[in-house]
Length: 342
Image 1 (spheres, rainbow, N blue to C red):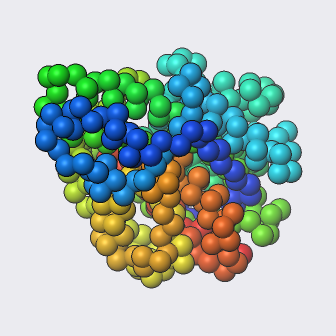
Image 2: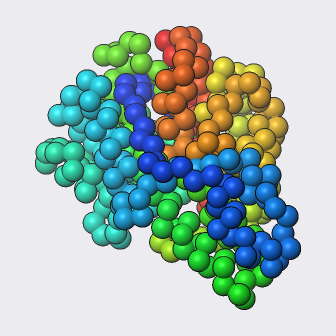
C-alpha cells in the first residue's frame, strides 16, 4: 500500500510570484459577453455573483506560459539565492509553450542554468505545484538533491479570448454557456519556490508531511486543450469536495489533523462557492483561509505558491504557525501538505 511521506530535512527556502500585467474586471468581461447574456436571458452581474471574482490579471496574448515561470524565478534569484545552487527543476504548469520539448528545459535555458541540472515537467492540472513540492522534498530526504526549483506560469488570456469568441456564436445554448463558464474565472500569473536543506536555513518554513488521494472516475468533469475548456462545474465541485474530505480525513488518521490544526490555509482557489464548500467540508476556520480569487481569479497550479508569497508579503505568515498547503486537480486528484514556520 502506498505510504504518505513525512519530511525531516526539507524546507521552502525561497519563493516569489509574478503578476499578470493587465487587470480585467468581471464587469468589463460581462460587457463583452452582453449579446449572448441578453439573448439567453441570463441575469446581469452573474460573473461576480456566481464566482465572487471581481477581476483577474492577464498577460499579453503573445506571452508564452513559460514567461511567468521565468519572471518569477528571476525575481526569486534577485532576492539573494545563488542560482548555481539549483540542481533540479520541476515545471508544474498546465499551459505550455509547445508540446515538445519540456517547459522545464526552456526555463532552464532562459535562467542560464548548466548541464548538471535535472529538469522535467510535472502535470496534474491545478495540483501540479504541490506535487512538485512533495517530489522536491522527497529528493532532499533521499540526498538526491540539495536545491530544487519548482515553477509554474499560466497565461489564461488566449483561452479567455477564444471562449468569448465561442460564446458569442449565435448557436450557443444555455448549456453551452455554462459548460464554458469556468474558463471565464481564469487568471494569469507565475510563481517559483525553492526547496532546500532545512539545516542550512533554520528560519525557513519546514515541510512536515503530505497526504494524497484520487478519484479517477471523475476525470471527465473538466477537459481542456490549448484552445478551449469545458467543465461540469457542479460535478467537479461535488466530487472534488468529497475527495478533499477523504484526503483531509487521511491526514487526520495519520498525522492528527483537525479543522483547527492549521493557523493558515493556503489553497488552490476556483471561486467563492468552491472555496466556501471546501472550507465547510473540512470544518476549517474561515479566518485561517487566505483568499486570492476575488482579485486574481483562478490561477491553476500558480495559486498556492502565489498565495503563499502574497500572504508572506502581507505579514500573515508568522513564526510558530502551522500552514496547510492544499489543492484539488481535475482528474480528480487531491494533495495536502503541512508546513511549520520555525
